[in-house]
Length: 446
Image 1 (cartoon, rainbow, N blue to C red):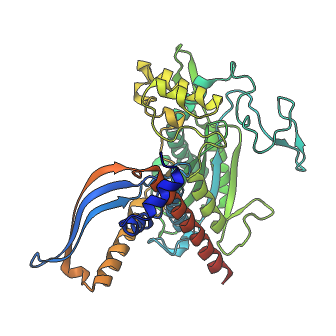
Image 2 (image 1 turned 135 degrees about the vertical axis):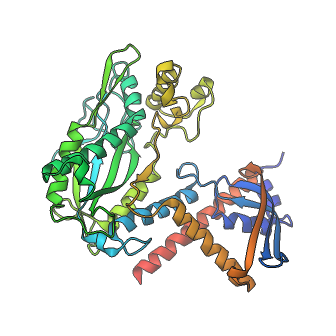
């Protein structure tokens, strides 16, 4: 049997290697591309005459946001997330006016409550490390970080049910925040929408213990959205106080499997920071305020992050037997098992926990926004497709206004056909990422 090195050498010497390599480059070295077969034609819009034809096999990026699954698709997702978040903070792009940078904005972090003591890294205000509850000093790479000190007493059921209902908690938080803001300025909740609008973008970030934190950019607009000036009373101090009041007052009660009530709330730690103009070079000032430029990248990183050093599963779990084969930490395995067990109960049918067991019960999108915050992923990706289409037509010397593109592709599979192709694609992807980083560094130096 040939070694992997021999199979790689054989693949490189085949006649179609250059064509295959070009297809890998076209998807930026995607780790598991979608394989399509078919053809694409560019036709004269008036006569239907074929002006250009391309057929055969092509790759389409998998589009997975998780770096553990596909680093290059994750990088693309992070870049799109950066532009979406940045547009809503700074304006000047994606149809958002620059005036939004002058409005009251805040960066808010809402955390998960405790379901039992876990291994952690504790420090004094001066930065000195102190032992956690187990009596040990944990280093950053310790795989026990985030796992319970006593797994038998840890409330796994409560943790999973909290995680599965964070979407309801967020919805109740934003609704209560509008009511609190209205009350603080002497308005009714119904009147508030005629005076101001709360816009936001939020991202969920997994912590080592497998529970998510929500990081959100909040912005106070006029009633018509980003182009509408905010009312004079919309100050940073008002927004900060309202966030604390709203977050502390939100709760949602559901029943445990034994019918005892479970009160779902946000954690004790609530962090609120004012957002400073993009001209500030440093990430934070002495008061803990954060700059626009740093924050957009910060949130984009959250959106592609896994669950920490001990990753949860990257794909849906099909049966209970799959759980035993997962390469995850004992703590995350226990959360997945709890999801599966709760998913068997009729009372939790609406939570669909079997489907979300690989996500440790989290059922939401990792990045969401209010309607008027900024642009959308769909628009960003559509702009990219239009740019590539225009680039192709320009190269062929064709007028975009006078042609029609007709696609006829069908699914053939996902991933590369052999381990040799997988290894070669990984090398190509690494070079693409290295070149991208080099260009970025050069542009920043200049």
